[in-house]
Each structure stands twice: as C-alpha cells, then as structure tokens.
Image (cartoon, rainbow, N blue to C red; front, side, top):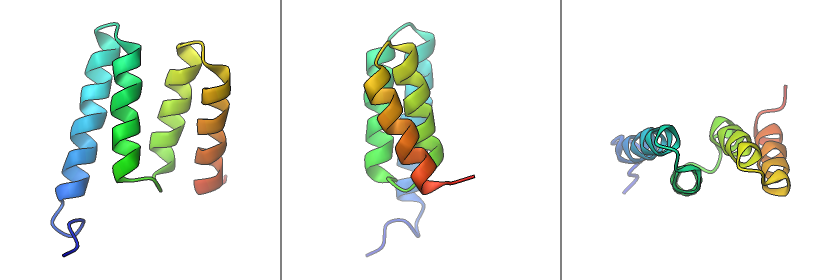
Length: 79
C-alpha cells in the first residue's frame, strides 16, 4: 500500500511543519527543530524542508547543523 497516494504522508508533513511554525512563534526553537526533523523523516527528498531546518538551526546558534541541512537542501534542489 502506497500511503503517499492517499495524501496521508503529505497531510502528516504539513501538520508537522505547521506545528514547527507554531512552536517557533511561541519561542520554542528546539521543539520547532524536532518537528521539522519529523517532517523530513516523512519526506526526506523535500529540499525546502531541509532549507527551513538550516535556517532554524542557524537561528538557534547551531552553525554545523545549519550548514549540513543547507548542503542537503542544495543537493536535493540545486539552483
């Protein structure tokens, strides 16, 4: 059974991204990063998710994690 066809995975990713944004707005960047990582686990080929994680890690003061996420995003979606 391919769950992606039914939109289940897409819905789960969107829910986690929305939760990450809400956590970030609430001043909980660690929880936001965790939620983004959960979304990435469901859709690891989405470069935009990796780029968002890179931005968040940068803002959290985690330059090594940010760079790794940005590199992964660039690998998936080269310009």
